[in-house]
Image (tube, rainbow, N blue to C red; front, side, top):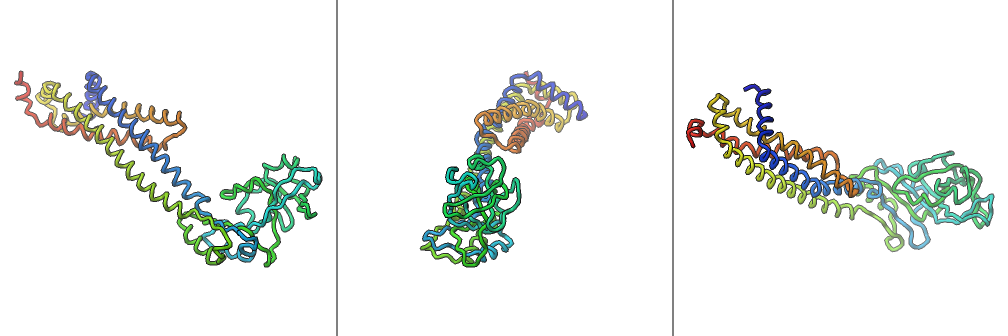
Length: 364
């Protein structure tokens, strides 16, 4: 029997055996549906956690002054920025209340922070240019509050200090808090005290090394500073994620195992009911291998339809709940379910092929 004829006969056999085919399709659909709404949802959570653990927030170290004496000085910023594994360094001074200089005291007050470091590493300049010492940038979110149609003019503090506005910006993570403050380049004088410093590692594996190097260079007094280091929490989350991943694999194997058992049971029952038909095929010349292939392909056809429908239904449900499962998992689940169902059908197919066709045909 040629492969083309074998495939045609398998599809016809599945069509003319509606009850077994429907049961196989139903079991395959249930396997995929259960796997996606349970293990798939967990996979989506793991992917989200992994993204968070590799994000800039998880790679940043912040040291803030708690006494008013300052954490470090501008030369240290340059040293930290020269480390190859560091992607950004930001030093900040204390916030200052400023107003639109053209409006004077009648204008709305906003906070201004004098910063140290490479400004383009922490913000995206939308209009204008990077500021120099004594110049400022305004976030797009504050333009309306300052009653500015364009980032121009100047900002003025209560003590008379002024900063020319040379552009607008949007912050880069993990410096999102800058969206609510204007920023100005601070003086690079060596004796200027920096009240807070944030160091961001270029990649997650470098976080520990960058943290150790930064603390060694700054050498802060633990009694005078507060240190925010998410690496410890990230390590804990990684351990928990690993345990959840192991649980998810076990659950997936359980779902596939139970589903394949039911598929095997349905196929075996169908083989026993139709043993005379299968024996007739053997007497007409089909080989044992051909008979195994016929039974397996007859199982594969409805299993493929059921697996696809179950996967689509599960993903539609998850999207409706605003918890979509990664599409690679959705695509892989029906394939795994189909392979599992096909392999399980080999057992009853092998049993059918091993029977003596003459004995079967003589059985009343």
